[in-house]
Length: 525
Ligand code: 9PG
Image 1 (cartoon, protein in one colour):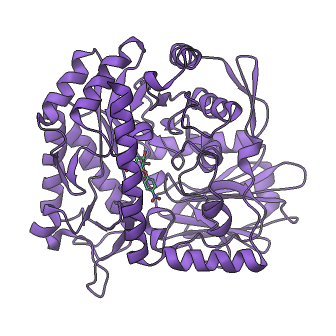
Image 2 (cartoon, helix red, strand yellow):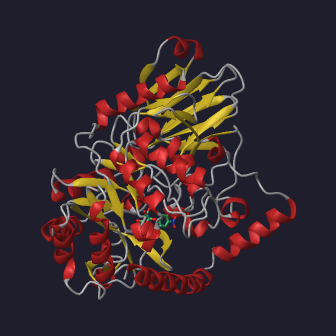
Image 3 (cartoon, protein in one colour):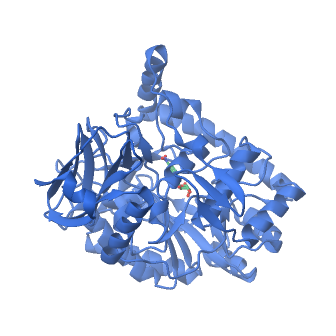
């Protein structure tokens, strides 16, 4: 353990080589910056006291770092910081891809999972310190901000998986007047998670879909989750031995989604590598060159790999393989990705969890105490705390909303996500012109056309072309439940951990989706 006296850090930022590093704090910090493992995990300044473990635990592999979540002390992935009474901060940040930073009593310390690594340690004003850290990360992991960030229409947040060829064709035509650079097809086109071929809803195939998009003068974008699969997939059926196992031989859980259990590929197996390369080639051959690769955390879960290497290193190697196979000219957006290992490889990264047509769900926020579930408040909170990544790559805060129909966000809340997109300089939406009023359509048009001047006036406040954007309302974490509410939360959490109950929930939810789809086809005609 290398102990650095605070007096030394106070003067100048330092880069120190060590396996473990520790700084004793000169006084009690008022806030702690915790940095979650992957895109959807919480990143936030919070009180320097532990927060409850998010529920249900069955979702942990896809929401947090399952290896850290039960730690009794405050800990975050790769970096951590404390803020003192006078507003100055002390940051410890790893300059390598496998490490954690913790706060135990008055010690801020970093632990590397591998051998000695470099640590960035600095004290001073938050903005300056994070800028310094990003710069050092860029020197080691690379900066990939070469391309312009495209303006994207993405199918997910209006239609969810209820997409089909006809509906999308109609939408692509109707979006004609709007200045999008990319039309991106999200989840819902594939046979199964693991089987990346067009399903029955796309009888003309994926090449035809990409051609349709390109015929409108836009680039074709596609969503895939290439590092995970469900047991129902043909991939799993044909290659059960390709999946990551624990030391005891059981399959590693990659969590649960689509009402099914997810499993992760062992990307260090040569056959899996070859399969991923073929998949990327196929997608490019169809004509898609904006790729949103999702659920990527599956490549960095703990397990026994064919090649004995640290999980983050295996993941980074896999990202290199994917990038090389898709080609340098493709726009590569990572989502659900462990943050540091993707820097220098992808063009853009999702930096928060999913937005939704609502601000927050009582069940998720208060009963389950889960700040990673879809919801606009959760999405803003984490994205605002990851703005420091901006010099390194394009940062995607998820889509902005314009339409008020079927959307319970207030006008102010919709403006917040729009302003956040301007701040991040990454503009995307899923809204459909025919669901918007004329005013809303105009708002969307000018959102896409303008590049307002953004200045930061505080941790959570900005000026966007003279307008004040204040994100404070999204920041605070819910109160930790006590008494009967805590008890009720435990019951709901326990129920949520039952696979059978989740399946039932999914079946009921599917009903909802089907209704949504018939409404969408009606209004689209
Ligand atoms: C498609 C979606 C969209 C979206 C992605 C991702 O924690 N969760 O259970 C969880 C599930 C799905 C999810 C995020 C979190 O959404 O972020 O943009 O592409 O997949 O299924």
